[in-house]
Image 1 (cartoon, one colour):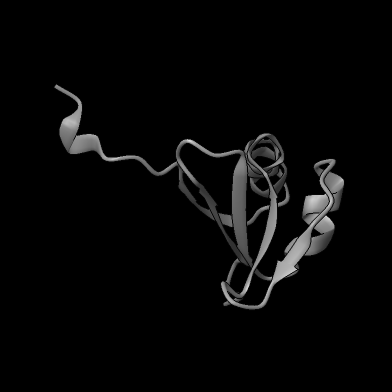
Image 2: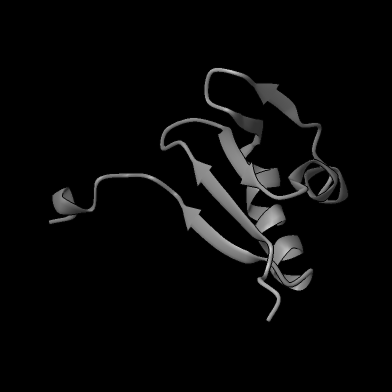
Length: 78
């Protein structure tokens, strides 16, 4: 049985930054219209939050298993 490729997208709250990790994600970011920038300290690709949201759809359409985190503290939602 073959495993599905995976991708993780994390959008920082209050910022316009998305961090992307996973298998062969650089071409997916470019396909979503972004310009990826590698961060050696986070070991992830950096792109804009808008491209990160578009990347979610591109990755799901390509058959990737997607983990999406939009950040934020949900305990203070009262």
